[in-house]
Every structure is written in C-alpha cells, then in structure tokens.
Length: 512
Image (cartoon, rainbow, N blue to C red; front, side):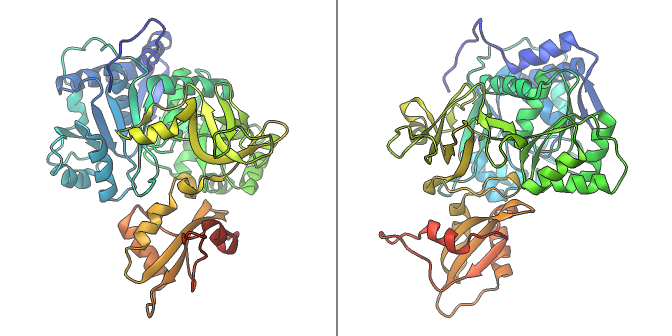
C-alpha cells in the first residue's frame, strides 16, 4: 500500500486513546472478566504492545491476524496497531479451517494471534505459511507450544515514540461473505472509523457516561464499530468473550450499560432472560439492530425508557441510513448526516422516487477497497460512487426501503451473519447425490432469515435432508448450512438455461 504522511488536519485512533487518557485518566475504559482498565491504563497497555510489535519487526502496513473470541487484549491490539500503522485482520472464528486458511493466505499476516480454542487450528495452518513469522496467544488461558504469550509484547523497557501514521491508509481488513466462492477483504482506514464514530456519537448522543455491552464479536463491524464509537466518546466498553444471555443482563445491571447492538435471535433471548428474573435495566438507552417487528414491539413494552434503532449499512460503508424503528416500521431509515445516497438503474442513471434501484453511496465512511481485488474495486467505485450491490427504493418522505441484493450478489442474513447462496450451493453440489440446487433466504422469526436449499437429486439417488445439512456443515462454517432442505423434480430456468432464482423464491420462499 502507498505510504502517506500524517497531516495537520488528521486525527488517528491513537490520538483518541491519548485524549481520553489525558482528559479522563481514572475513568473506566475497558472491563473484561476481572480485568478493569482505566483510560490511562488502556493507553499504557497500547503503548507497551505497540513497542513490542515494533521490536518484533512489525512496520507500517503489516497485517496482524486475530482468530479469537473477544477480550481486553483484542481491544489493546486494535489500539497498538493504530499507533504504529499496522493493519488488524480479524478473522471470524466460526469459519472452517479451510476458510481461515484462505483469509490468511489472502492477506499474508506477519503475526497471528489466536485464542486458546483456536491455537491448534492456527498452528496446523501456519506450518504451510512462510509469511507468518510469529504466533501469539490472546485472550488468556494456556499458551500452547509454538505460541508466545500476549504479555511478552509488554516486556519492553522502552516505550517507542509514535510512528508517522496517516489515518487514511489501512487500519482493519474485514472479510465479507464469499462472492463467487471466496470472501473479499474490505479495507477500512482510521479515518473511516473516526467518521463512523462521529456519526454514532451524534445519533446516540454518546458521552463519557455511556457504557457499551460488547457481546458481538470484535471481528464483526457492528461490535467493532460500536466499541470504537463509545471509546471515542470517552465511555466504557464492557467486553464479553461471547454472547451469554444471563451474563449480559447482569452486566447491563452492574455496569449501568446504555447501548448494545443486536441481531436475531439475541434480543428475544435477552427478553426471555429478563422476564424470568429480577433485574434493573433502567440504564439502557439504545439498541440498534435487525429483528422481527414482534420482538421490537415487545422490547418497547418492556423497556419504554430505551430506543430501538434500525438502519442500513455494510462492512464496506457504515451508517448509510437509520431511524428509530417506530418512525417508519420496516424501512431502513433516512440517509445519515454523513452520506449522500442515490438509487441507480443498471445503466447508472438515478431512478425516480418509489422506483427500485441499486443503493449507491458517497461518504467518508466508504471503505478504501477490497484487498488485492483491483478489478472489483474499479467496478465497485465506478463513476465516483460506492455501488453496494443492494437494491432499494425511496418513499415520498425520504425513507429508504431495502428490497434485495442484486442477483449477482444475492445475500442471506441468518442471525446477522452474511451468507452468499453461491457458496452454499457450491458446497451442496459436492455431494454425489445432488444434480442441481438453488439456495434462497426465507423469513424466520428466530433467525430473522433462514437458509433454504431447493435441490434436484440425480436419477436413482435418495438423500435425507438432515444428511445433506450435516454434509454442508462439514464443508463450510456451520452458520452457512441450510436450515431447510426440500427436493423437487426440476428447477425453473431462464431463457439462457440458468436457474431462475426469482421463480424459485416465488414457489418456495414463503414464511416458515
């Protein structure tokens, strides 16, 4: 990547961390299990780890991969990388080893940080990866052979000075769902993150008094982005290793949590837990996410003091549109303060109000591009717009309504994860009994959207639906496996002989 020089109008994530340490040194910044770091303590840990990374040979633009559950050390690594200009490569720990291997090979990290549950997998993978120079344990627990303890990065007796880091270069690479079989790494800059922070600070009126209950994974843009915004506001991030409904409720009460991000079925699980106990959650102010209207209405009854926000965004561009759910139920809200949003037809001409078009965005939160995918970047950023691949329409009052993905980028979102049908179809077709398949998303009260596979079997072959579901789960991440499998005699085809996904949806895409 091109090396740039920090400028007089620039601000980095490390500047934010330093400001917090100076302005509110004794206020809590990060809480994780029994660890409690003040803003001053967080900065000191970031400084120590940054110095350790420099001594380990990390330079500007080097990638640092993380395959781990949430922890305070995960947050420290983000801060340390911001100081020295390294790029964090957070990897979805739910992926199969082959999928993790692809992401590592795609970005060639110099160092890999693995949690205790993932060190065996990482150890086996990096044996074949000469670009990986060292592996570290992260998040606590036993450090396996071949790994160094995270704390070893804090052993330097000298804190290195700041590195000249331009904030409009890479800071994080988050891989999106697999298009045409392989995920793409979306590069976010520190400037992208800072503008996303400012947007969230304005939307939620964040202040040093706010507390984010961070149970979404820090590899996910929702968990990461909200943690950064609350930190920027001078608030506190209470980090959970992973989602646990009882622990989440207890932490909201104990730490006076004010905000969290939700994907189905999290909210329903939390409300069930709340109604089965006795808790004080009056501190809660904001929840943002996607869920079934019935769950959101129940939330409003149980927590009338809190607001439920909905909106539209991507890993590639944060905060495109948002509003309170009650303003226009079912919509994705109005364009944000920091985004110009238009809808284009297939010839990149703006469509009239009420007409379906591709959602295209200009914003300082638009990502830098896909790692190593120049042809994709040219297509995505053509004519000076970020083409999201999502289709929507505006109503007369300016609310954006998400409708679907473009056919070439069809997307299913079970429980907040992104799954492309093409990847699931590829795995299904590896089964020797399947001749053809079309994978679609269907509404689901529990997951928000469920994966359904409509299959044609080869002549003379039989296959139990659960057997095929288990087969797919053995090939790709389990959250990508079908929830439903049905068999048909034939699939509808277009004039050019391709499977007609729209017709499959009409015939088999009803509510479950």
